[in-house]
Length: 83
Image (cartoon, rainbow, N blue to C red; front, side, top):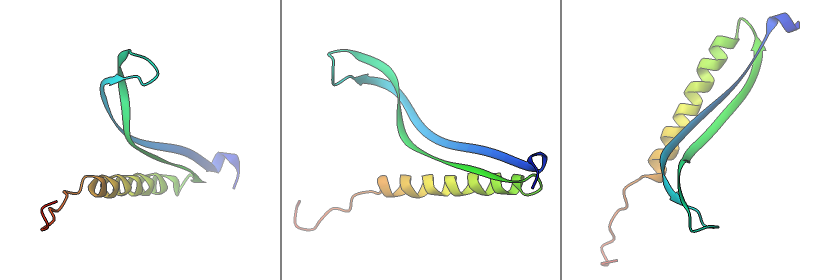
């Protein structure tokens, strides 16, 4: 494969919330982006295959996010013993 036939992509999927945070090393509070989830892929392929590869990588990253989010935010099932 020649360089003219090769494509390279880096995809990063990130979920964040912007909010005020208290800095532990200081008494100061500041407005900052808090990263809730982040993942990515680096890929290269022949120009004819690259659009499919990028589409599939975005799909995989999106599924990872949804799975992780659902696991992390699963409702806690109350126990019968009162705790």
